[in-house]
Length: 474
Image (cartoon, rainbow, N blue to C red; front, side):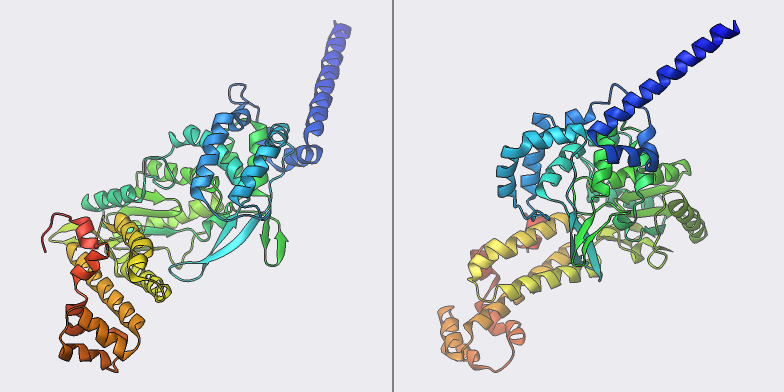
């Protein structure tokens, strides 16, 4: 009996060793270096694959999915990455090399390009770091996102609104208003410090591995996380963070922060989260301070993220800004409002446009440059903009255009001639000889009666108030 048991044990050991050698040889044939280091340094690779979802990468590279992803990449436009290929050049490149790219993706030998570091100014000061992938990598990331989004989105919290199909910022603001109308008029404004630059790769991949069992797809995503960054100082490794600028980053951020959502739900908190903007609503300041301390510990110890303690605070909702909006208490009822900071940011942007439009035809400038900006601003801020605010902005925009026109007329003789052409008498047209500045002149009765609202309406100037209330009489 002992001899038979020894023979069986020896046979099983030999079979296990043979299977292990075959697995190592198979992995080494695909990508030896990545296979060995990845298995030891990344715990999420050790998870067993589910046969039902082990073909996710095949679904990613399917023809229909890639065609849909390419349409989205072209629709998003964007600049070229480190390879210098534009969208048109990449289209020709993909037609010629896609079979080889697809083969390397399925074999696990595809190496993503580093992202191009671009810094853009933030509205509140400072710069925001963006990582621009190549067009080919944007295509692959978009294809991955299209497959993974249906898998994860159904499990996300109802209080999460950022980068999710069928949801937008307005929904988050309305939900925040509902929490306040329910009596929770203290807000825990949680600010995650440089969220997209501080994401821990191991924490993120472990969350991703809960649903994704395809090892090849997980290695590809991990390759994008560790692709490196090309900046002015040269190529730098990516030890943490998800570059903000790729199609996959929004989904990965929601996957990571879904743990925060579930923790807040488990505690019974009322909250709204849009990407890394999180607002938790409570009834008293004391409970708000307690929630701030406990949530900060969870974010820093469990999710390995950093909380900006200088910007995070517990305050009244009407003293904070959430997604560009604020809230006001009028006659005992909470209402959505546009804060002065958002209005000033809009005015500054219009001033920049007007400065660039000094040498252009006014009618063409209004139709091609100014009107799209006005429509876009109204489309977003119509949720909290009042009639009075919109009428005030319309008045200010017309005065800015009068100032622009007055500058374009330049010489006194030209100004006198133009005023006469607009119906002014000879005496009133002599106002064109004034030495006053353009902005002062734009507010005088001489110009307001010559360049009337009807004058700009004939040149198709978009009215914010009429766009919001088309049937409202002035």
